Length: 263
Image 1 (tube, helix red, strand yellow):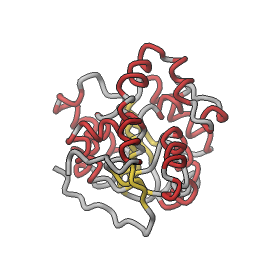
Image 2 (spheres, rainbow, N blue to C red; image 1 turned 90 degrees about the horizontal axis):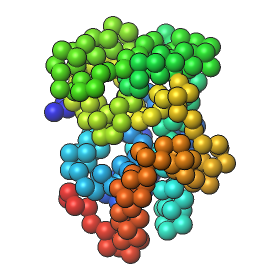
Image 3 (tube, rainbow, N blue to C red; image 1 turned 180 degrees about the vertical axis):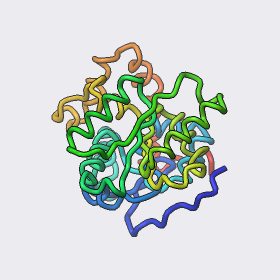
Image 4 (cartoon, rainbow, N blue to C red; image 1 turned 30 degrees about the horizontal axis):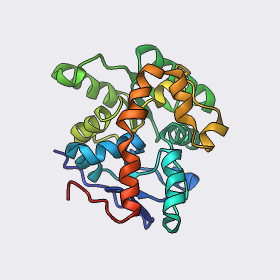
């Protein structure tokens, strides 16, 4: 159970999307604000899981910064709830490199550690970020083996590696819900880490192992189609089976019929 107190939140508006409140930040203002807490960036897959999984929902209740990752969700909210005025999509894959760029001259205080990806991608991502920022802001990285979450010795090794690097900002790219659960269970064991990012495939994006869609596709809400073309076997079921309930839930919210199953 997490005992670390949530950080004090600024006076920022929130927008209700199904059963969670999303913080309504402009992108640049959010990057400048980030100093401590846990950042989660829900996409459609997350919103469906938040409706179906009470443990995942409880994770979100403990986290400090919830911003909208999905362009599709952003555009649908503009269409269906124009008065809510959701001002920006803040994707984790954009946020993390922007955070590193913002603090590239502050590496005496900001030290980033990457947890996740493959052994090759985590090294490549560290080199890519440090090269792009012309700094040593990423101080280390580790790709945990399959099933690590059930191995106490491996879990202790991860904690020690993060602490030994002097980490202040930890980017966790283990996939959802594993990354959110891991942060919830281990946040208190890392008192030196002030900021946690749950960032999914961002480590692989930074390494160049997985390419992102062209910006025009992202802006039009078509990034999902690009990922489908790149990884059809993995993404087809996610997009066309697992994620479909989201659109029904959002329509129910528009009609005033949606109910949070956990409250």
